[in-house]
Amino acid sequence: MSTKFSQDVVPLSDLKVNPGKVVNHAKDSHRPVLLTSRGRGVAVMQGIDEYERLEEERAFMKAVAVGLMDVREGKTLTLDEARKRLGLD
Image (cartoon, rainbow, N blue to C red; front, side, top):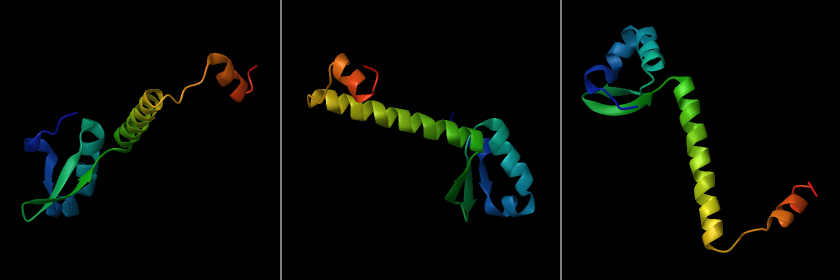
């Protein structure tokens, strides 16, 4: 998902005139839309499906990083210990 500046940068005035068009563009393109005011970026709009996908991906990556840190610090369990903790013994 890379931003296409020719299509994905929208002045706030355009959003005020035709909000549905801007929202549909963000939803259909699966790319964020950069909203600008006086030539400066002020906000980002994206479709809910893309937002949820990215949040799930971010949470997964965070869990992987925490797991790798635990392994590095020696915070591990044997398979039997894990089963016992999960009540699968």
